Amino acid sequence: MELFPAMPLSEWADTKLTLHKFAQIVGKIRLAASVRRNHWWNVAYHVTGRGITTRPMGGLDENPVFAVDFDFVRHRLVIDTLNGRSVSFPLAGNSAASFHHEILAALDRLGIHVEINAEPFDLVGDTTPFAEDTAPAPYDHTMANRYWRILSQVAQVLEAYAADYSGKTSPVHHFWHTFDVAVTRFSGRKVPTNAQVDPVTREAYSEEVISVGFWFGDDNMPEPAFYSYTAPEPQGLVDEPLRPEQAKWTVSRGSHLAILRYADARIGDDPRATVLEFFRSAYLAGARRANWDIEGTSCPGGVTDPLA
Image (tube, rainbow, N blue to C red; front, top):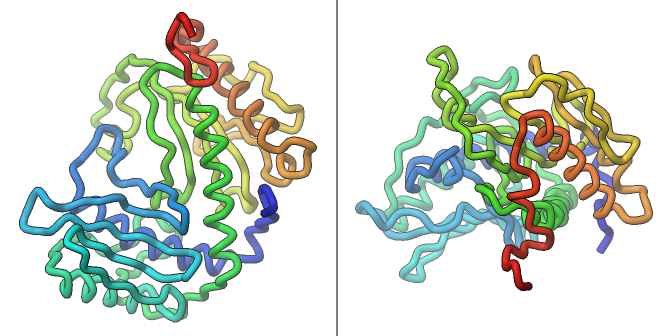
């Protein structure tokens, strides 16, 4: 199994958009049926041995406990309930509208009733409600499977990075908003509330964070890349060095991102070590400038036992 296989955005942009829409529909079900967690941790997907999952939800209302999984080996959408009932249907061949209809019908057959705001969230230039989006939705089986394989490989690198920090840390999770996989460290310091900022962003960034992750590319950066940002951004952040030498600071939406192109990371002798070096250098850049307790929260290899 190739590590970090090639994934040019131009070769699967249509399939990526299809998956992004499907993921948003299921993600909104997760949002409606799960217990809210700080920083919206409840809404993200997690990687499985066959695809991605919402994890179990329901059970605290009239709905049974259930989970929704994307299976990128068989290329099916699978809904399982705690009592053993299951419904699935193919991912390929659906428009956003037919996918929306299929999943609601499947939930109904299982006795699950969830109301969602079935409109795209921040999909640039695409505001058609899912139930009305009958445009063809291409689905390339090979690229959909590769997307999951890359997610799985990157997630393991993120787990290794996350292990080195003993402070508050998010899970390694896949967001259906920006379609990235990420892990976030928190300093423990609160960020002053700004009423002019939307409530989604206020909840996500209510504390100081340094986030690292990977996305598959979009209109702003038309290629896959590893990234990191510090929020709020401390003064002088871009004066800090990044490793490896191919990494760079770039401007995005008025702040700065540390970027390592996927194409640069995957061709080295040890791609995993290259990505970890990048994540760790970006974290140290933000932590130094924002005066985080670097030494006190360090736990190399996930070990906090002082006698180990």
